[in-house]
Length: 417
Image 1 (tube, rainbow, N blue to C red):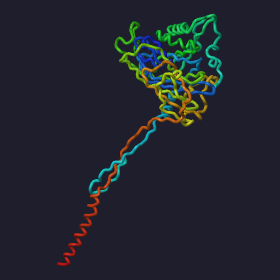
Image 2: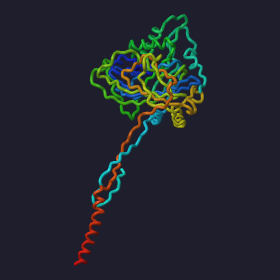
Image 3: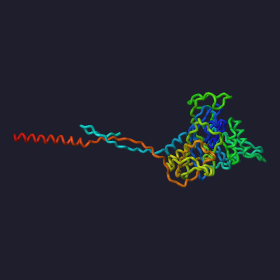
Image 4: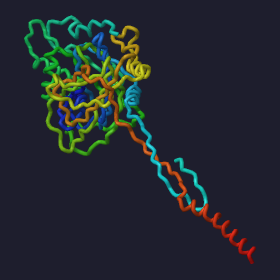
């Protein structure tokens, strides 16, 4: 079942029991799904006004049958990306390690001297013109399924609502039609879901419905038991949770400016005992350092810039290559830039809970183009150095001198005698 939230929004009636932020999964009754952490890469092709959006999430679930909805301004091109790209991004923006040495002096043992210790923008008519050109509009209105496709670990369906000839239905009727389609295809919805959909219907957006596909990886062990049909969420003995690290998904589409899907349905408050803590990391690769604003900027976005700079072009280029996935031959409509030369990478972190999901997060060049780095990670080491106390020197020098003087005195006394 599914849950939507701009990027992924809550769709289930049980969403009140799980966090509602972007990409909120919706499980079947009797199961629980939470997003442990999530990351996104946005590669912005300013020349062609194409956004390449790669998203990966780590779920903890008591069931495998869940999904999510992703809105885009027009029909997206879907593909998978390599698992390694977020590891490379994290390495690029990681805090530098500074080694600081503290020297501590110790007195050498009497009787010896010690040693110190060492310690392009290819044309794609359906995407360029939106979903309206994907197929001739039939006379009757309804939900258009523009594409169905297996994408990595998901079964995906790209949806759009279209009016029929002479149809005067509004956003509410379109949202209801989409909701019925989702329910028919196994997605649980709530009144908040339908209300959330109205904005996208009114603005002619497409929605891609993702659902975890097929059986889980055998290496993860047998799937959890399915709850009885009459089971209600949150009742009965808890089922053992399992971690699901699903393959990253890439969506490429045309946009006026880069954005992160952040809007989410208005749902009931989370229970006090609900675990809703998680971190969102968004990487934006563009021609300059970017900043994010929630909607028109009236309300602040809690995401903060934690790193910004120009990475090594070859390293960032390898990220672009791994984000490309396996395109459907040379006719793939959208290709990531062949070179990362001149690109700036900006990383944002959003740890807010609950998130103010009232609008999308839009990105634009920042007024301040100065580089930003994380505070360095300090590694303190201690080097012990042995030193000889002054009284050691007095003994080492005084004893021999005293012995010589005593000998001379004794010799003189002997001669006088």
